[in-house]
Length: 212
Image (cartoon, rainbow, N blue to C red; front, side, top):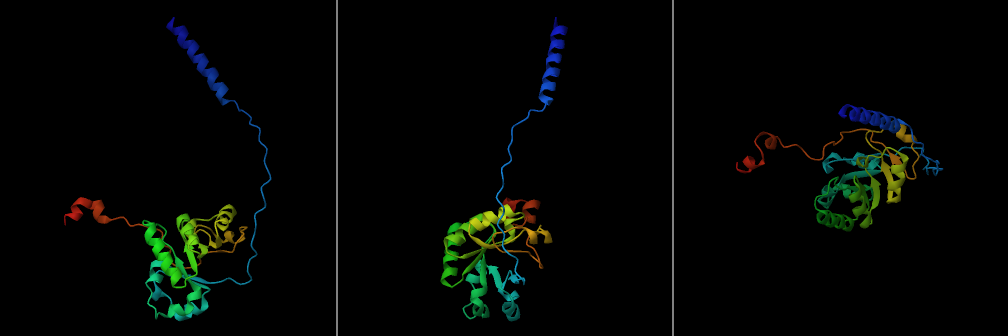
């Protein structure tokens, strides 16, 4: 009868539910993790200035800073008589966080090397590779979102000689074991958004915008 079949079905489902709820032990042997490499903390903290435009950097700032970080495009377009070239050994080209045309950035990197720029800062793995291929001294940007010693080790293995940890890290990041020197963003405006939402697109759409 149908009632008996339904009853048997319910009993089978209940039994199956009980079996599925029982723990199933899995053998596990925790291996010994290698001790993280660490770089000794310096006695004094070095100051690095990361500016969006060359005009934001004064001579006094250039003298005091260990490194002057500017967008790669801004450095490539810098006039030959600009005072910043007096501090060429301190200049660091910050590569774009989003690379749309790799060929353009490749040409830009080649021009920077011809100008004598030695340092490059990268905020993504693609830019890190590109800068490494052109022989720059590599510096990891905060946009790599480093928050633990595993990331520090991985980026060091990729060639970064120092790394700025994520903006989200607190002062506790100072104690993170690291094979290379690490830094914190201490002051300034943080560019959070890479692209901007277009208000015209949201209101009338791209097609009507092109039509005027």
